[in-house]
Length: 215
Image (cartoon, rainbow, N blue to C red; front, side, top):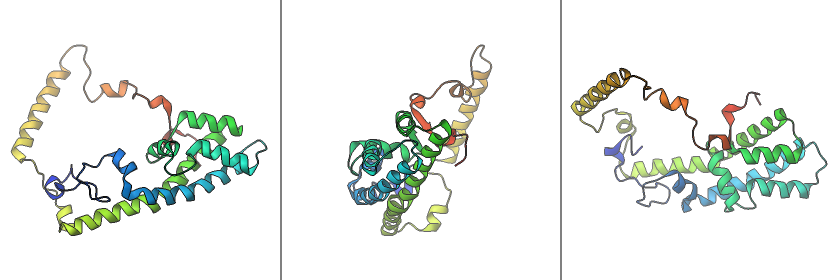
């Protein structure tokens, strides 16, 4: 919001802890004001994972073994580094490839069953995340807006903070650059070139959208 509506949100830091820091993804994950919400999420998520492990495993596994495996996957507590890593990617609908492979190998799952497990795991996490963490974040955001007299009408106004004439000039320069770029021999358009390159580290992630088999 601060990037899109700088005039309205120039004083916005973190709406949850009221710090003046520019809120980043890392701050959102580690914000002290949201730790109780993460704690509630974890203690609801952990038994769901453990029950799902016992349900889908293709080998004999006792409840204590399932609990130990769950701890290795998502951590023993909400402030565990293992859970911090898991939630970092799960919030984006992703799971580490190493975790996915470990799940498949440890539970003796087929490729299809492994994909189902990963997708269901992320689905349960996302539901709890929306109910326990994101809801509180949104409530804090609304409270901050009320305190700063920002109305719904203000947020709907699509006026740009940048002078229109400057924007037109910038667009004209970009358009000219694109024309010149396309007429150079042996060059790619800037809009095409990134598609030809792999995203760094993407091979280490299992992305929910990559799963061919629906849950």
